[in-house]
Length: 364
Figure 1 (cartoon, rainbow, N blue to C red):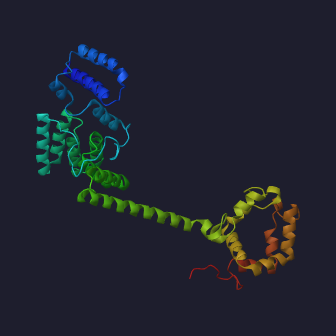
Figure 2 (cartoon, rainbow, N blue to C red; figure 1 turned 30 degrees about the vertical axis):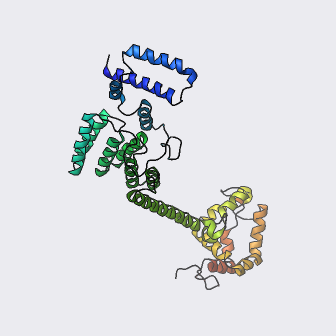
Figure 3 (cartoon, rainbow, N blue to C red; figure 1 turned 135 degrees about the vertical axis):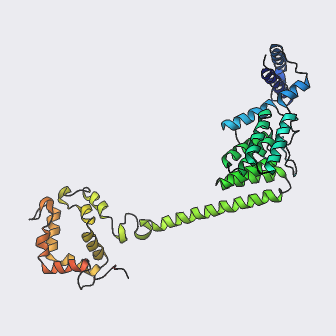
């Protein structure tokens, strides 16, 4: 039988024993758990009382912590418990793992060689050596955190985030991993996530945190506040540039009423509904738009138009759908423009005459 299978069997037996001791499993189920442990030991031919074999199987980790790393890799676990929770009181001012580090000599040798490569700035070699150490002890937070540092130095910040998150999942009290997670997130533009990582590092360090951790937190927090300020400024600018800000709901360009919307209310955006002219089409014509804008800004001109008999006749024809206009009840524009009074008013409204509207709205 493969050695890895025997190690797994010992890890399962250790998990069952721990579940009884810490109260995860009710004492009423003790007999069932003992039977299960015995069956596993007999089937896989392992001795649960052999502490050396058990340590060789899982080191100083546990099956539960190893599975926690697996869940982290799969994205199915939440953030590690924060300090203050039962059974998770923070250590004070330490960046060392909360439990004894694995004593696998080969893994430790790879880690030492990786550290030497980091000092020589040979980050590619360091990553390779740390990876070899991790292969021998997958849940060791030191190896994972060291490789995260090597990834950051190689500008592979996404990989650094992944390793640092695994390290904090394996042992949230190993505060150096929080610091490296904060740095990698910050460089990737996740200032809020960086601030949260530094905050957790400060809380796990205790006593207000180290100066380096507090400095990282301050830098990330300032960036978050800067981004939030820019976002608020953008919202104000967008609000100020909105048509509603200058002309009210339903307003058009230059404070003009939305004539296309009026056309829809009166029978549709197209022409001729119920004898009505195509107001939407008219307002898309620059000449008519200019006339309408000058007209609305000059009450005296508007009053003059309302007193003109020819325009009153045109309005009556539009309202009744009759009168000798063009198709769809439209007035004969050519005939209207033959009236000198109307022609002069039209020129004034377009800004081309010598009347009150001349030059209105022209650039300075």
